[in-house]
Every structure is written in C-alpha cells, then in structure tokens.
Image (cartoon, rainbow, N blue to C red):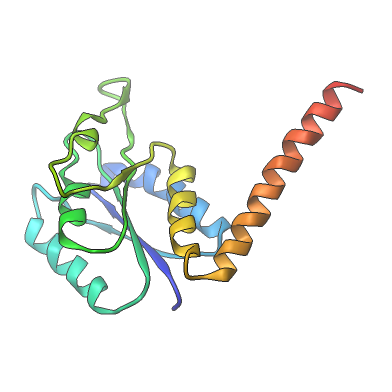
Length: 159
C-alpha cells in the first residue's frame, strides 16, 4: 500500500458524515479505513489503534470526524507526526457546525479544520500527493473536470 487515509469517527452517529468522506476518497483512488474511537470514552483504545497504524510506516493522513466537543482530532494530532484533518459533522442540535473546540486547540496541537467532507478528502489527497505522483495526477484531472463543468455551465447559459 502506497498511501492511505484513516478516518476516526467519534461515534456511530457520525457514520453518514464518514461515508461522504469515504466516497470522495474513492474518487481519488485513495485507500482508506474507518474506525470508531472516542477521545473521551475510549482514549487508550484510540491511542493503541493510532500507534498500530503509525508503526506500519505507510504514508497516512488521519481525518477525525467528531461532533460536539472535538477532543478526537486534538488527541490524534498530539499522538502522531502524521497530518491530521478535523472534519466535524454538522450538528442537528445546534443547526450548524459546532466548531469552537476545533478552532481553539492548545499550543503545539494543529489539526487542519475542513468542514466539507469532500474538501477534507481533497485536502488529504493533496497531502498524500506530496510523495505520490499518481494521486497528484488524479487531483489535476479532478481540478480540470471542475473547471470544465463551470465553463460548460457558463457557455450553456449564454447560448
């Protein structure tokens, strides 16, 4: 395996959000795996799982998808040298994203915050593309297709 993304969900309630991230990763042809592990409820298990992935030596980006209090991305980021992206799901309770705990990380803990699941996958892909030319080429094709769709839409409106 040349590169991968590991997605940590804080609970089964984050499943739909995680699926959206996985679908976007599939479009880039990036291997991925999802796990449920809570920084609040199962911190030792989370750290053990993370240590196992890190020990494999495979280029990895971690995405943490946890709502409410986002300790998940902070704990993952503090325990690995690999890039970490936090992509919290929208909260039905709050009618928006609960991002304050994602924005206010302590010094030395720096997960990137990306709200859109597709964009979180794209960010992970760009990080992995630093050392994988195949992923870089798939990103270029994705960007070209995005531009072509926009140009086609504009031309269609002006015919």
